[in-house]
Amino acid sequence: MHHLQLRIRGRVQGVGYRHFIMVEAGRLGVCGSVRNLADGDVEVIAEGTEAQLGRLIERAREGPRGARVTEVVAEWSQGAARATGFRIL
Figure 1 (spheres, rainbow, N blue to C red):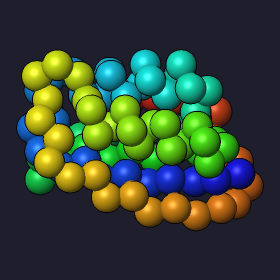
Figure 2: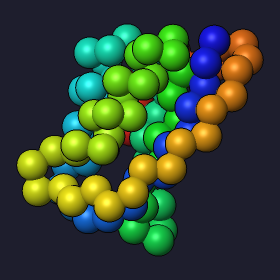
Figure 3: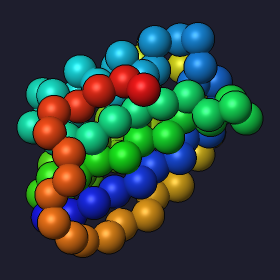
Figure 4: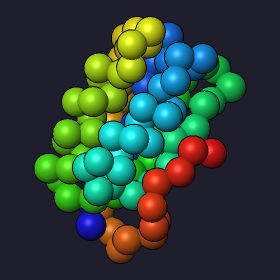
């Protein structure tokens, strides 16, 4: 199982970004979570196939209308599945 931690920077809070990621993750069959960080960034923790997670990165770079993504930092790892479903924290 591939694991991915994303840190998304830019105007990503207060624009429906977490909901957007949750919907995209569900559409892609990705498990994990998304949350706002105190510094204004958004963090995504996700697991799935390499292809699924690659597509999630693409969608994270686009974001919803109203968002302005300036940077997406991705950290990859592998391991056993830990999550079921996808949720907003």
